[in-house]
Length: 53
Image 1 (cartoon, rainbow, N blue to C red):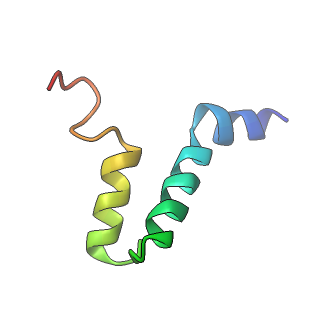
Image 2: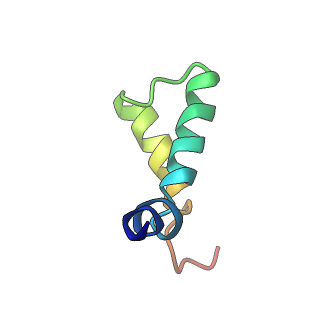
């Protein structure tokens, strides 16, 4: 249970999976360089944590 909490809830792995599935359903290959970059952009919070844009 502790590992689940660590990776899925606190690590927000569920969000990464959800965004990956959404991008894949739109036809974007998240294994490609551009697909991976777009996935990371949404998962990591866009312009970065702490940016006030």
